[in-house]
Picture 1: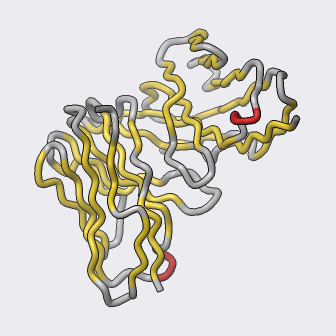
Picture 2 (picture 1 turned 90 degrees about the horizontal axis):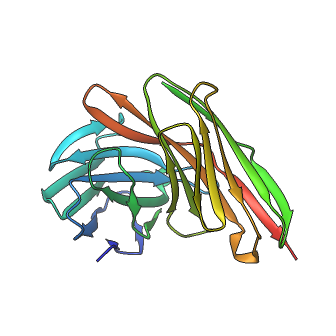
Length: 112
Length: 112
């Protein structure tokens, strides 16, 4: 299994909603990442988990809250988002932090 | 900090060869990756260089010169399906944390 699976594929949420994005991998990778990507822009790193511990938080607003329940799962909890948070949210994993990253297909998030 | 530069757009003809350049300035270089991203899809890994020289993988080759802070991705025998964004990503080391930072990407259009 060489896949990173993200759910849902599409999400529309209001500014007062609470929702969660989920990511799963079964490659035994010990590093997992959340990236945000706006149209025609490169992916921007949000968070890095290494061995289930948060190792990098790129000054992301607290309305985004990551969680790593175990080595295979990574969640991103969303609360009180703004319309400008609408983007493609990509999860990735790698064998170790900084190694070749495998990306999921992303969740297309629209905040209304 | 890091600064990664790539051309924004390139156009080439089916069957031709195209070279996409990437220059970088980083405080702690630890490898360079090339990814391909089709519109609306996740980035997929193409190549990795950490030592100077050329890495060849089928129709794709990647070159690195660490002293010049320079890499290129060479695509041979271009096919229509090669139309995509090509992202250069640099891995650096900040203490014990290693992370990838992406360039803005080069949008390649292959014409018949």
